Amino acid sequence: MEPLFGDDLLGPPAVELPAGAHHVPGWLTMEQQRWIVARFHEWIHGPVPLHSPKIRGHDMSVQTVCLGWHWRPYEYTRNAIDVNGQRVLDFPEWMVRLGRQALIAATGDHDAGASYTPDTALVNYYSDTAKMGMHQDREERSPAPVISLSIGDTCKFRFGNTTNRNKPYHDIDLASGDLFVFGGPARLAYHGVPKIYPQTAPPDCGLASGRLNITLRETGLTG
Ligand code: SIN
Ligand code: MN
Image 1 (cartoon, rainbow, N blue to C red):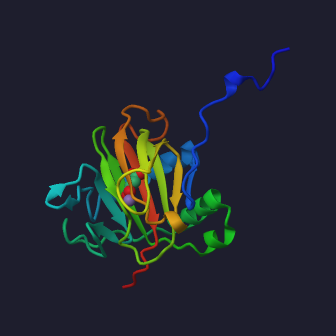
Image 2: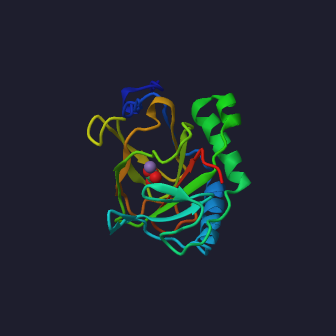
C-alpha cells in the first residue's frame, strides 16, 4: 500500500512571522472578492478620483483612493487637499464588520475583534509595474492593528523589522483573497511591495488585471 504521508508531500516549511503578524491565505471567498471589486469601481467615481500620491515630489506608482480619512504623505485629512479638495467618502459600516471578522480570523482574539473600530481604508491599485517602498504605517494615533486584504494579481510582500528598512525581513506572496494583519509588537514594522506577478489573478476574482490592496486602520483622530 502507498503510504499516505510520503516525503513527496512535504512542502516548503511554514513561514514563521514576527509576533503580532498573521497571514491567512485565501480568507476572502471569490464572491466577496468580486463584491469588493464592484465597490472599488464605485469609489473611484469620486468625489475623489483614483490618484497617485506624491512622495518627495514624485508620483507614487501605486494609485489610491481613501475612505473615511484621506491619506497623503504623511498626514490624514478629511478633504483630499492634494487632489481636488473634496471630502472623501464615509467609511462604510460593512468595513467595520469586515475588519472585526478579519482580526478574529487572524488572531482568534474575540475581545480585540469586538473593540476594533477602523475608521479609514487606503485602497491601493497596483498595475503590473507598480511597487511600494519599505515604510512604516505611523500616521495613526491608535495602536490598533492594520488589516490588509489583497485581490487580483499575487505580489511579493516584504515584511520587515521595526528598526529599519533592511534585513531581517520576510518575503511572502500575497495572493487574491489573502488577509494579512500586523499589530502589537509588529504594528510599526517596515513593509513594502517590491513586485507584482502579472496575470496571476484568478479569472473570477473580479479584477481583470493588476492588484487591489485595502488596508483598514484606526486613525485615533476625531473631527
Ligand atoms: C500598504 O503598505 O499600505 C500597502 C501594502 C500592500 O499593498 O500589501
Ligand atoms: Mn503600509
